Image 1 (tube, rainbow, N blue to C red):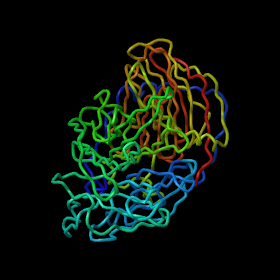
Image 2: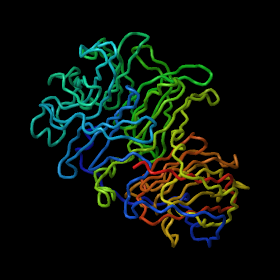
Image 3: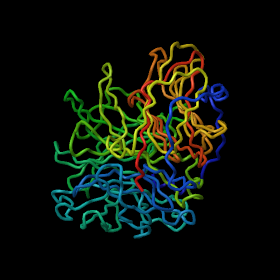
Image 4: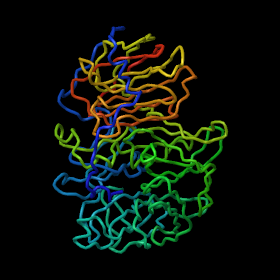
Amino acid sequence: MGLSLMLTAMGCTNATPGHGSSADASRTAGSTAGAASSVPAINPTSRRDTYHFTVPDHWKNDPQRPIWFDGAFHYYYLYNADYPREVGTAWRHATTKDNVTFTDQGVAIPKKTNANFDVWSGSVVEDTTGSAGFGKGAIVALVTQMDHPTPQQIVDASGPQAQFLWYSVDRGKTFKPYGERPVMPKPGVRDFRDPKVIRDEARQQWVTVLAEGNKVGFYTSPDLKSWTYVSGYVRDDLGTLECPDLFTIRTASGQTKWVLGVSGNQTPSGGPNTYAYWVGSFDGRAFTPDDPTVQWLDHGNDWYGAVTYADPTSDQRRFAIGWMNNWAYANQPAPTWTSDGFTGTDSIVRELRLVDEGGRMSLRSAPVSTLRQRASRTIDLGTVPVDGTRVMPYHGESYVLDADLTWSQHTPETNVGIQVRRSADGSRHGDIGVYGDYAYVNRAHAGNPGRFAETKSPFDLSRGSVHVTVLVDRSTIEVFFDDGRSVHSNLAFAEPGDDGLAFYGVGGGGELRNVRITEITPIG
């Protein structure tokens, strides 16, 4: 995945808003209801999110899967201190105990450390038995680098991709390379990167999944140094696969399943460009999906390179975090670069659970529960009828909003939703709602980075209601529809001071019930 940092940004055009843009509703004369005061911004000109993880300075992209040891989650991510003057990535380190507040621990693997140039994506494991020979408890990273690239290959990011071992004997603070020769040389394919290592205790082996173009390759090892190819899972419908994932999770009824995930792209066919997954079985060599139809953990524009990681307290829950960006515009400096000197924001950490929905296993997402523990206050607005647009007296740039959207009839024109980050004159806003046969988030008028204005996920309007949880922050909007059956994560660089809120309903109107706003104490 680190390869993409070297590429030139694609040209961007503004997408045309669909019906979900609620253009008709936004022009309806509004009224006011309820009473709630705003919380003053810490820095009115800043665009840095107040409760999402952001890089301290310069640039970040791919998360590397966090792991738990020594009483904390240890999170590494790709970091470029030379942005925008120079490309390339190091591994920067942060720790957290609650998956909300992260403490920066500095750079763990610097850029240009050896002849293989920079480190790209990979994964970290704790080698409790010392199988790799670095001692019991060593923290071992398997990462992608270019195998002795030429100067021109460094410039083009075209050197042979291979997998190298790095290890830490100071509990993950710093890492050393295990020589300059790969432990997994390039096997004759162009794309060969993003290793994800797990421990398969049932078979006393290490397992790695690798992104190989249209294939996820499976490899096994007794010692993290010698690897054997055992199988591949091929998909020709998701573009170039990146950042694969493999893990087990147990349902509430006690059934344990394997999940294979990848960062995939169905944008050409109108689908997501985020985290695709399949639920199935793994026999130590090959993965077999129960259903080959792809499922998606996010339907937004900006949840790429996502990783999941184990909850040390429960095998029925898993955490996930994604990079909030899209390679269609990631190489263009974000407004946060001008305002705050950085480009790089992550999604809120999610809790994942596996549920059986009519015989099909699916992952359900929710914002990490510890986020609510940082609430500074809650504001209950009760039930708000809508027929047209209803402007609320609440103002805020960073909060969580919960509501049950309901509608009295379901006609082709029924459109019920929420406007966040609304400007004083109502011309700018981000829209969240349901229309026709889909739920949507539309950022066309809320600081769209330049492409893909509206995102959609299937929804049956005849149900008459849906619960939504909306995470609004200074540069991001994340929406959990239907208790996490579908999620939309989007960058939205709204203008500072656009902090209004409105509800709308057209084509029959409706109500927003059980409306609650939770303000979050800033984590900075």
